[in-house]
Length: 226
Image (cartoon, rainbow, N blue to C red; front, side, top):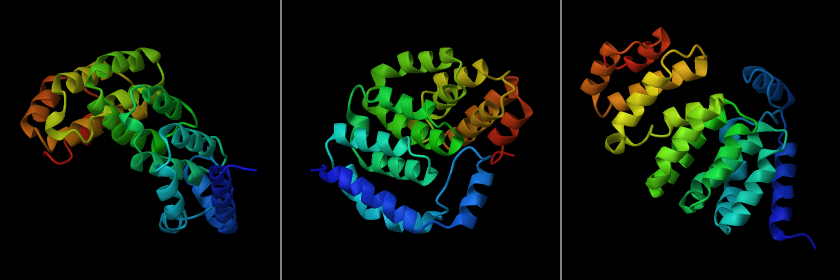
């Protein structure tokens, strides 16, 4: 007999398949640079369909939550990865000491900004507030990895920290990668600085003034300061 979670997963996939919109699926795939397949379910409809499943899955034991989300993550349709992220946000996975390895797997598997940014700012961000002693070790390993998405995570994980932001770390990372030509790194630097400017505008102004940053990073950082 199948486990209840297996049955529920099958029900979720069948429900999404039933609500497939081929035209929207093509449009969504094109918007995401043809990197992923889609059912073509708009966000409001996806949220409505998945709500009871997310509620049930997020209350499972942490190991089962991870197992369910791994299953969803490797399925072709991108909407299923979005469901996995919503499950994880409502779960307690970030309170488990070794969960960073799972989050790193999510970041480097089926990678693109739409999943990486949420994992970085919500899941990794919460995890490192729970386990601050892991921060320096993980950030150092991400920066040395040469993986675009792990580097972006290092820059963005403090997005929601406000006055808890490690300013020296943030500015240090922005300086370290200020010469990068990669769009997603330049954008991340600007976004991280812009967000921190809501808490410490003068510190960000001073940092941008006295450091050499890419034009895109400067535009993003100064968006609400000029």
